[in-house]
Image (spheres, rainbow, N blue to C red):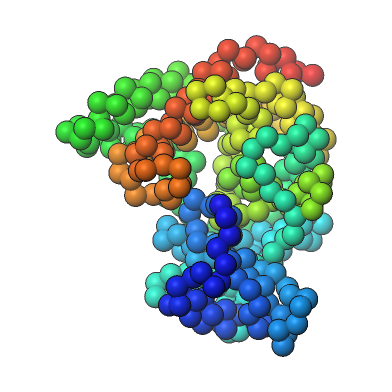
Length: 356
């Protein structure tokens, strides 16, 4: 997404952002621009400098999606402080002038974080990058195994795959008279049937603290793109089976191709497993062997979430290349199911890799 300069912003938007910045102890505004291509929050890269000097300090300013309450900031603060003590680098929240973790304004929550310089990738990371990122994810998980914390912000049914599948069925029935039903109902049936087959293969596993959204662009690499230095976006922290995080990372990092031709790259998958196992000392054999089920689970869950929004068209942000959320979500459903189908063909090879 191209960055939007301050000069192109509406004056009303500029004034509002400047007023919000004044609530944080970050110095004088030097520059601000829209940042990234996040699908949920409104994000800005802010640069400030005392007296307008030419050596600015960079921060991230975000207006959170309405689904996130201010309590999510308490969770992030608790986890990042713990990780910092363990030597795991993270983006850190900046408290307001009044000492609060965020700013409430017109029923909207704003926050500021220290900007971590470097590079993030949307897709097609190299073998070396995936191995290093997998080692980082393993260190992240490993460092949190001894954190005894009760999360304050709970996203309703987040990564609750059975409930998401159930809700998909309910929404499909509710929109039975909608013209979209003829297109989406067969996909809903396909997702539901695949889940019924998969569910008995998922073993009971211990709840652990997970990132919740470890997609590739939530990994920050150094400015040369060689070393994975930090995970980003801690809004989805919580407790769940570790295979939820691993499945989500693998389906994001290790896929290749586009659209209906997307596939799991087995070399990248093996590289991921090798890197992760080097640092994830806590992982049990049961958790390791359940990784394929975790990948399948997250693919069906995402397909169901996209299908729900294809009907309702209220959750995800519309990307510029699409004309409607229906079209966007329909495309993403097809991508998740194509990757799911490819995964079924490679189960034997995947299990062999995991046995090494």
